[in-house]
Length: 243
Length: 264
Image 1 (cartoon, chains in turn orange, green):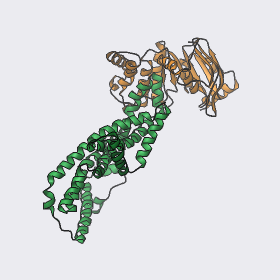
Image 2 (tube, chains in turn brown, green; image 1 turned 60 degrees about the horizontal axis):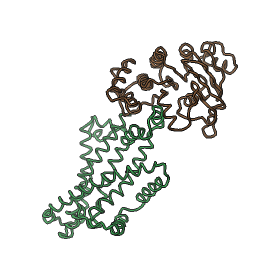
Image 3 (cartoon, one colour; image 1 turned 135 degrees about the vertical axis):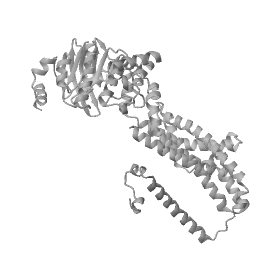
Image 4 (cartoon, one colour; image 1 turned 180 degrees about the vertical axis):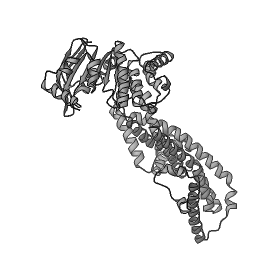
């Protein structure tokens, strides 16, 4: 996929989350957005996912500008998947319904087909035994895998993952990262905001560092993480290596 | 366990659950204390009990109790419709509708039910040509309770987390689908304890309909009192009749509350 962000500004009240961000990526299968918390990577991801509109500037994906109108945005959002840091599953539905309901109500599957597909995805993520459990009865790692299954169920063009492991302990982080790796293996296009440098380096082909609302550095993942060129990127990555 | 410790529990309410003996003894003690206070009060009054004359009118009590049950049930049904509608209107894009809903809720909650009963009965119903006072009574109770139910539901709707709405948006739900599958079920669930409490209030408040001569439980008890001159023999059954309706509802409200707490 090709991503183009041109002088994108996003403000919340007086706070400037993105301060004229320019980012052009010609071709990537998996892009990792890294950088300090509050630096703008999650905002960038939300704009790309069509969950919010930029205050100014343009965003194009594969040459098509993301719409501003609500109904056009909804159409766009139906073609992409999003995974959130806090899973954001619906607490009153069990795991299988969380996955099947959007298929049935948004993507026009019959009830039987939607449940069949949801069941297959639960199998794929080793959640077969948990299909009828509600989010409160599942661990964080299990919930996040259900959320990933929900995001990829309608075969989206792109899957956006917003710090999918930041709320998890190391063991659960590993199981969720493994699940994400299977998405990459099956040729899903991903954009992931993450603090997992090791994962960004080996799983993503492109890494962009965003800090203070601006692009710091972008390029091949191992090159950016192992030998960053800019001082800001070096400072950020050094802090990671130190502890 | 010493005798004294039977009467003491910890600040954690669930701890006493495991000590049934302690619970029963303490509960009995509380009831005994209240009975003594009541007995002492009536002794001081030197009241002449005359249950026989009041009991002759037990059919009147029963009829009134059943009338109250019906009035409450129908009022509750319509109150729920009105309350839900007012909640939807309070979120309307068209601002005059939003303000209409706001004014309805504030005026109804801010004025005494008695005033509303007189106003609707003598002004609105009269102008609308509604003759049946039971219809008017149910309408008044539905409008009155509807305002409270609307507030309860509104709080429930506002309590649905922002992350849930974001998730619904990401999935591609329309506004209607978001409301139908995400907001409404969660809001309703969290509102249930308060709604049960409001139901108990509605049953008690319906006693005020006696002022427009609707022969429900309270009016019938008043009539028995007027015929037999035995006030307490008329009003004790009244209190107990209301408790039979409200106590189970309040227990239900409590148990729903507990269950919801465990779920989250």
